[in-house]
Image (cartoon, rainbow, N blue to C red; front, side):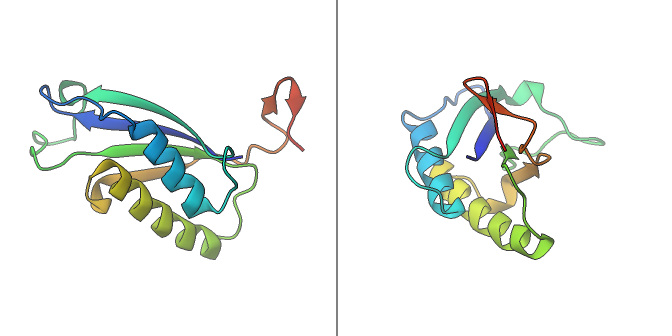
Length: 122
């Protein structure tokens, strides 16, 4: 069961689009090949004034999307490369951002470290 935490940098006059969390969950589920109900998304806005890059102001055209992804198992590096490219394209399309602005952080494997309803994942 993949869980995605998505944080989108927004300008002061922007807001998260209605239905975006569902579009992201659907896109992630399809890209990751999981059945309906198995890709979970938590979505947050990050005001541009709370985002910075070292050395200079961030150009207005840069609109980052940060994704932390937790899965029970990660797979091989080759599998992750393919999955990451597919997921990045899907999430970029779902939120209307260039794929170059989507950054995915793979968290350590959740198996044996995460529980659902008090039951530890095998």
